[in-house]
Length: 106
Image (cartoon, rainbow, N blue to C red; front, side, top):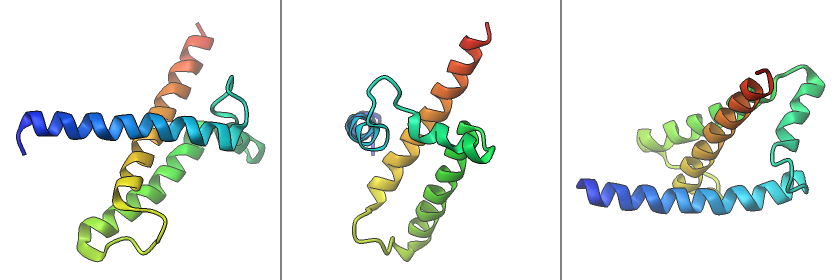
């Protein structure tokens, strides 16, 4: 794969990532103004939202690791690409929450 192919692949993944973020935000939060409503609920059990997201990310990393080891993913509804896109979205959410908290404290 050359750099142009890599960038095209990345662009494709990020486009799908955006589409999924919008769908999941509507599904989990049902509020356009707060796309993190569902992850903020982790504070009800005294887990910071960013930490809650990292826990979910570890599940994705575990599935990706299984796939990379050649064992595939056993879920009918979740492909390797889905795990990668979810990981992209989780990392972006952590970044957004941490940056938002930093901005709120200044």
